[in-house]
Length: 110
Image (tube, rainbow, N blue to C red):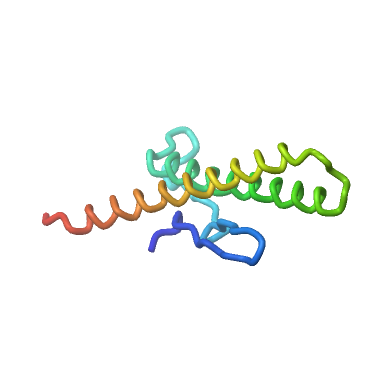
């Protein structure tokens, strides 16, 4: 598995997508003046996972605020739930496409 794959952690109240290596930093051996295409792609994938985590955390906080009475707008909670669900689905679909592409490349004969 590559470092950009995400692990879906199902908890009783919400699913959270975590990067496989959360503290992973890309080291570009060619220097900062010429970033590789892979490093740009890798950083975009990591940022997507981080954005998804932020959306899920925002939704969980809204659910908690609604349950404790700090928030009374049920429509905002439902919209946050839909947004979090869509973000998780999008991230998992992108992850599946990346894995599928990797497998296809590995099947190629040289």
